Image (cartoon, protein in one colour):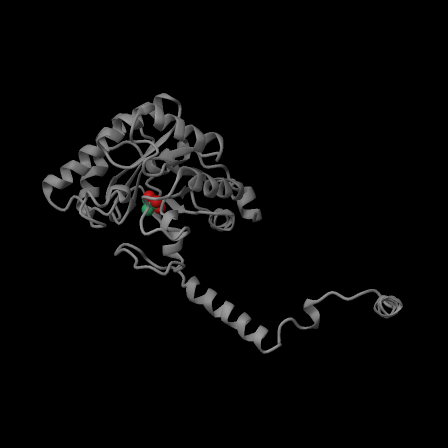
Length: 289
Ligand code: KIV
C-alpha cells in the first residue's frame, strides 16, 4: 500500500456529506479483487463499489443476473483486504434480497460481517424501497440504485437510458425520493438524461452518484475495467476510457510468448545458482549412484 494511502483519512458518510455541501465531487469506482483494490486505494478514490458488474467483467457471465452471493462475497472480501481509506460498498446480487425483508437482512449482514462492507447497494424502487427501509432499521447503511437497473434490464426493455419522457422521468424521481425517505445513505443514478438528474438534485439531501447521468450529480462512478480499457466487450455511451490496459496486457503477454519460444527467456539473471562446488559435488553424487 502506498505511503499516500497510509496518510489519507478514512472516508466516512460524514466525509461524503461534507463533500456534497462543499460541492466537491465524490469519486466512486468499482474494484473486484485485491490488486484492483490496491490500485484504486493508491489513486485516492472516495468510495469503492464491488459491483455485481463483476459477473460480466470478471466472471464472464452474459449479464449481472447469474452471479451468486458466494461469488460476490469472495470478490468483496479480497477487495476489503486491499483497502484502507475509501468506503466499501457491496452489491447485493439479483435474487438475494427481493423476496422478503428477512432475506434482505440476512444477505446484507453477510456482506457486512464476512466481507467488511460499510454499505450495501440494492437496485430499483418498488418493493426494494421496503427492503431498504428494513436494512436501515437493522443497522445496515444502504445505497439505492435507480434509472437503468441492470439486474432487471430485461423488464426495462434492455440496457437503455431510462426517464427519457417526462412521465418516465417522474418514475425515476419518485423511486429516488422513496429510497431517500426509506433511509438510504446514498443513491446511484444510472443512464438517465442529464435534465432528469438536474431536476432530481434539488429534491435530495443524500449524496447522488451518477453513471451516465450527466454532470449535476454529487459524484461519478465508473466500472474499473471500462475506464482502464480492460474489458473486451462493448462499452456504454457514458464510458470514457482513461487507459488501454487490455492492449498493453496483450502486448506484454505476446512478448513473453515470443521470448520463451525463441529461447531468450529465461536469461542467466532470472535463475538461481548453487554455491561454489555444489554443482560438481552433485555430479559426483549422481555418479556414485
Ligand atoms: O455493478 C456495478 O458495477 C454498478 C455500477 C455500474 C453502479 O452497479
